[in-house]
Image 1 (tube, rainbow, N blue to C red):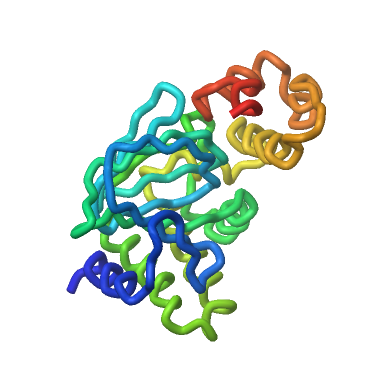
Image 2: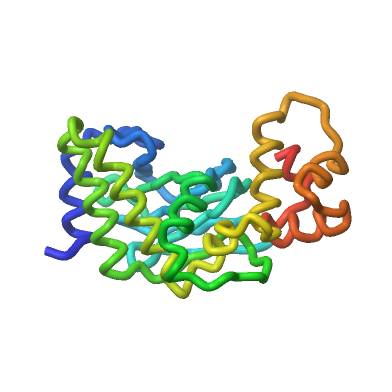
Length: 239
Protein backbone atom coordinates (compact mmCIF):
# COMPACT_ATOMS: atom_id res chain seq x y z
CA UNK A 1 0.00 0.00 0.00
CA UNK A 2 1.50 3.35 -1.03
CA UNK A 3 1.75 6.43 1.19
CA UNK A 4 -1.37 8.09 -0.19
CA UNK A 5 -3.50 4.98 0.33
CA UNK A 6 -2.22 4.69 3.90
CA UNK A 7 -3.10 8.33 4.54
CA UNK A 8 -6.63 7.69 3.25
CA UNK A 9 -6.99 4.73 5.60
CA UNK A 10 -5.94 6.85 8.59
CA UNK A 11 -8.30 9.70 7.68
CA UNK A 12 -11.22 7.28 7.14
CA UNK A 13 -11.03 6.43 10.85
CA UNK A 14 -11.67 10.08 11.76
CA UNK A 15 -15.27 11.24 12.02
CA UNK A 16 -15.20 14.20 9.63
CA UNK A 17 -17.77 16.97 9.37
CA UNK A 18 -18.13 18.93 6.15
CA UNK A 19 -15.71 21.85 6.24
CA UNK A 20 -12.54 22.24 8.32
CA UNK A 21 -11.83 19.58 10.95
CA UNK A 22 -9.24 19.76 13.73
CA UNK A 23 -7.16 16.69 14.59
CA UNK A 24 -5.20 15.51 17.63
CA UNK A 25 -2.21 17.28 16.06
CA UNK A 26 -2.63 21.05 16.67
CA UNK A 27 -1.12 22.15 13.35
CA UNK A 28 -2.85 19.55 11.14
CA UNK A 29 -6.36 20.15 9.78
CA UNK A 30 -8.53 18.12 7.42
CA UNK A 31 -11.00 19.68 4.98
CA UNK A 32 -13.99 17.78 3.62
CA UNK A 33 -16.46 18.86 0.92
CA UNK A 34 -19.38 16.87 -0.48
CA UNK A 35 -19.93 19.15 -3.47
CA UNK A 36 -17.97 21.11 -6.06
CA UNK A 37 -18.26 24.48 -7.75
CA UNK A 38 -18.71 26.91 -4.84
CA UNK A 39 -16.01 29.57 -4.57
CA UNK A 40 -14.87 30.14 -0.98
CA UNK A 41 -12.86 33.22 0.02
CA UNK A 42 -10.48 32.75 2.92
CA UNK A 43 -7.06 33.55 4.35
CA UNK A 44 -4.38 30.88 4.10
CA UNK A 45 -1.74 30.72 6.79
CA UNK A 46 1.75 29.44 5.86
CA UNK A 47 0.88 25.85 5.04
CA UNK A 48 1.40 22.73 2.99
CA UNK A 49 -1.77 21.28 1.46
CA UNK A 50 -2.18 17.80 0.00
CA UNK A 51 -5.32 16.29 -1.52
CA UNK A 52 -6.32 12.72 -0.69
CA UNK A 53 -9.40 12.67 -2.90
CA UNK A 54 -10.71 15.04 -5.58
CA UNK A 55 -9.15 18.17 -7.08
CA UNK A 56 -9.18 21.89 -6.40
CA UNK A 57 -8.45 25.29 -7.91
CA UNK A 58 -6.89 28.06 -5.81
CA UNK A 59 -6.87 31.67 -7.02
CA UNK A 60 -4.40 34.15 -5.49
CA UNK A 61 -4.51 37.59 -7.06
CA UNK A 62 -4.38 37.00 -10.81
CA UNK A 63 -2.72 33.58 -10.46
CA UNK A 64 -4.61 30.29 -10.68
CA UNK A 65 -3.34 26.95 -9.35
CA UNK A 66 -5.04 23.60 -9.92
CA UNK A 67 -3.90 20.48 -8.11
CA UNK A 68 -4.97 16.97 -7.11
CA UNK A 69 -3.59 13.97 -5.21
CA UNK A 70 -0.48 13.82 -7.41
CA UNK A 71 0.70 17.26 -6.33
CA UNK A 72 0.72 19.64 -3.37
CA UNK A 73 0.05 23.33 -2.86
CA UNK A 74 2.29 25.43 -0.67
CA UNK A 75 1.71 28.89 0.77
CA UNK A 76 4.84 30.35 2.35
CA UNK A 77 3.05 33.31 3.97
CA UNK A 78 -0.44 34.54 4.82
CA UNK A 79 -2.44 34.85 1.59
CA UNK A 80 -5.94 36.01 0.68
CA UNK A 81 -7.24 33.27 -1.61
CA UNK A 82 -10.35 32.06 -3.40
CA UNK A 83 -10.68 28.29 -3.53
CA UNK A 84 -12.99 26.07 -5.55
CA UNK A 85 -13.36 22.31 -5.26
CA UNK A 86 -13.45 20.86 -8.78
CA UNK A 87 -14.17 17.22 -8.08
CA UNK A 88 -16.34 16.01 -5.17
CA UNK A 89 -19.54 14.11 -4.43
CA UNK A 90 -21.33 12.58 -1.44
CA UNK A 91 -20.04 9.17 -2.50
CA UNK A 92 -16.47 10.41 -3.02
CA UNK A 93 -16.03 13.66 -1.07
CA UNK A 94 -13.13 16.02 -1.57
CA UNK A 95 -10.63 15.51 1.26
CA UNK A 96 -7.43 17.48 1.85
CA UNK A 97 -4.86 17.79 4.63
CA UNK A 98 -3.40 21.12 5.74
CA UNK A 99 -0.11 21.22 7.65
CA UNK A 100 0.60 24.63 9.16
CA UNK A 101 4.03 26.04 9.94
CA UNK A 102 5.52 29.39 10.92
CA UNK A 103 8.23 31.59 9.48
CA UNK A 104 10.27 30.95 12.61
CA UNK A 105 10.03 27.19 12.11
CA UNK A 106 11.30 27.61 8.54
CA UNK A 107 14.19 29.74 9.78
CA UNK A 108 15.06 27.26 12.54
CA UNK A 109 14.96 24.34 10.13
CA UNK A 110 17.17 26.25 7.72
CA UNK A 111 19.68 26.99 10.47
CA UNK A 112 19.87 23.29 11.25
CA UNK A 113 20.05 22.12 7.62
CA UNK A 114 21.86 25.12 6.06
CA UNK A 115 24.77 23.01 4.82
CA UNK A 116 22.42 21.53 2.22
CA UNK A 117 21.08 24.82 0.86
CA UNK A 118 22.24 27.63 -1.40
CA UNK A 119 21.24 31.22 -0.81
CA UNK A 120 18.33 32.41 -2.96
CA UNK A 121 18.31 36.11 -3.87
CA UNK A 122 15.30 36.37 -6.18
CA UNK A 123 11.82 37.45 -5.09
CA UNK A 124 9.14 34.98 -6.14
CA UNK A 125 5.43 34.57 -5.66
CA UNK A 126 4.72 32.98 -2.29
CA UNK A 127 2.57 30.08 -3.48
CA UNK A 128 2.83 27.28 -6.00
CA UNK A 129 2.03 23.64 -6.74
CA UNK A 130 4.57 20.84 -7.07
CA UNK A 131 4.72 17.10 -7.66
CA UNK A 132 4.19 15.13 -4.44
CA UNK A 133 7.10 12.67 -4.27
CA UNK A 134 7.37 9.49 -2.18
CA UNK A 135 9.83 10.98 0.33
CA UNK A 136 7.49 13.83 1.22
CA UNK A 137 4.49 11.48 1.30
CA UNK A 138 6.35 9.26 3.77
CA UNK A 139 7.15 12.21 6.03
CA UNK A 140 3.52 13.39 5.98
CA UNK A 141 2.31 9.85 6.69
CA UNK A 142 4.47 9.63 9.82
CA UNK A 143 3.04 12.91 11.08
CA UNK A 144 -0.63 12.20 10.35
CA UNK A 145 -0.39 8.68 11.81
CA UNK A 146 0.25 10.33 15.19
CA UNK A 147 -3.45 11.19 15.24
CA UNK A 148 -3.99 7.57 16.31
CA UNK A 149 -1.62 7.88 19.31
CA UNK A 150 -2.37 11.23 21.02
CA UNK A 151 0.14 10.53 23.81
CA UNK A 152 2.97 10.78 21.26
CA UNK A 153 1.83 14.02 19.63
CA UNK A 154 3.55 16.56 21.89
CA UNK A 155 7.04 15.16 21.30
CA UNK A 156 6.96 13.42 17.93
CA UNK A 157 4.81 15.89 15.97
CA UNK A 158 7.55 18.54 16.21
CA UNK A 159 10.13 16.06 14.97
CA UNK A 160 8.00 14.96 12.01
CA UNK A 161 7.14 18.56 11.10
CA UNK A 162 10.85 19.35 11.03
CA UNK A 163 11.33 16.34 8.74
CA UNK A 164 8.64 17.69 6.39
CA UNK A 165 10.23 21.15 6.34
CA UNK A 166 13.57 19.52 5.62
CA UNK A 167 12.05 17.70 2.62
CA UNK A 168 10.58 20.97 1.37
CA UNK A 169 13.72 23.04 1.92
CA UNK A 170 16.18 20.67 0.24
CA UNK A 171 13.88 20.20 -2.75
CA UNK A 172 15.02 22.15 -5.81
CA UNK A 173 11.40 23.17 -6.28
CA UNK A 174 10.54 25.18 -3.17
CA UNK A 175 12.15 28.55 -3.86
CA UNK A 176 9.36 30.21 -1.84
CA UNK A 177 10.43 28.57 1.42
CA UNK A 178 14.14 28.89 0.74
CA UNK A 179 13.76 32.67 0.38
CA UNK A 180 12.07 32.87 3.79
CA UNK A 181 15.10 31.27 5.41
CA UNK A 182 17.31 34.33 4.81
CA UNK A 183 16.71 37.25 7.18
CA UNK A 184 18.01 39.78 4.66
CA UNK A 185 15.79 38.52 1.83
CA UNK A 186 12.84 40.57 0.59
CA UNK A 187 10.56 37.57 1.13
CA UNK A 188 11.52 37.38 4.80
CA UNK A 189 10.92 41.12 5.25
CA UNK A 190 7.54 41.05 3.50
CA UNK A 191 6.50 38.03 5.54
CA UNK A 192 7.32 39.94 8.74
CA UNK A 193 5.26 42.87 7.46
CA UNK A 194 2.32 40.57 6.67
CA UNK A 195 2.48 39.11 10.17
CA UNK A 196 2.33 42.64 11.61
CA UNK A 197 -0.69 43.54 9.44
CA UNK A 198 -2.53 40.37 10.49
CA UNK A 199 -1.88 41.05 14.16
CA UNK A 200 -3.02 44.68 13.94
CA UNK A 201 -5.99 44.60 11.56
CA UNK A 202 -8.16 46.61 13.95
CA UNK A 203 -5.47 49.22 14.62
CA UNK A 204 -4.54 52.32 12.61
CA UNK A 205 -1.15 52.12 10.92
CA UNK A 206 0.67 53.57 7.92
CA UNK A 207 2.25 51.42 5.23
CA UNK A 208 5.25 53.80 5.27
CA UNK A 209 5.87 52.89 8.92
CA UNK A 210 5.63 49.17 8.18
CA UNK A 211 8.09 49.55 5.29
CA UNK A 212 10.54 51.34 7.58
CA UNK A 213 10.16 48.67 10.27
CA UNK A 214 11.41 46.01 7.84
CA UNK A 215 14.16 48.27 6.43
CA UNK A 216 12.63 48.80 2.99
CA UNK A 217 11.86 51.93 0.99
CA UNK A 218 8.15 52.44 0.39
CA UNK A 219 8.52 51.83 -3.36
CA UNK A 220 10.49 48.61 -2.82
CA UNK A 221 8.01 47.52 -0.16
CA UNK A 222 5.02 47.93 -2.50
CA UNK A 223 6.82 46.26 -5.40
CA UNK A 224 7.94 43.16 -3.50
CA UNK A 225 4.68 42.89 -1.53
CA UNK A 226 2.70 42.60 -4.76
CA UNK A 227 5.23 40.20 -6.30
CA UNK A 228 4.94 37.90 -3.28
CA UNK A 229 1.19 38.12 -2.52
CA UNK A 230 -0.33 39.11 -5.86
CA UNK A 231 -2.02 42.20 -4.38
CA UNK A 232 -0.99 45.57 -2.93
CA UNK A 233 -0.45 46.08 0.83
CA UNK A 234 -3.65 48.14 1.06
CA UNK A 235 -5.69 45.50 -0.78
CA UNK A 236 -4.26 42.86 1.54
CA UNK A 237 -5.17 44.83 4.67
CA UNK A 238 -8.76 45.16 3.39
CA UNK A 239 -9.12 41.52 2.31
